[in-house]
Length: 74
Image 1 (cartoon, rainbow, N blue to C red):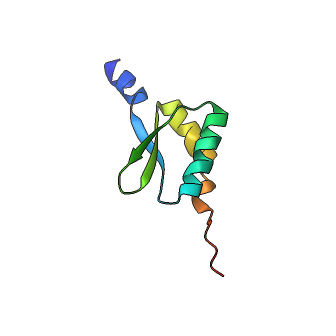
Image 2: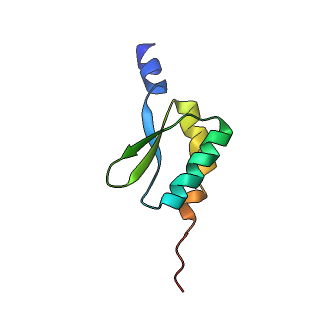
């Protein structure tokens, strides 16, 4: 039973980016969904979520965000 509890309380990175716009949108989406998160600055910004159910929900919410490109290449 102890290993199941530890698994549920693990923290995992659900998004990592150096783009502050992507991070801002991700934070807003997670707040709106009621998912608690933490920020880890490790050269790039990492958004971390704890708990298997929250990790799954956060990844689903943020899936399309990773593909967005906020750069203007013109």
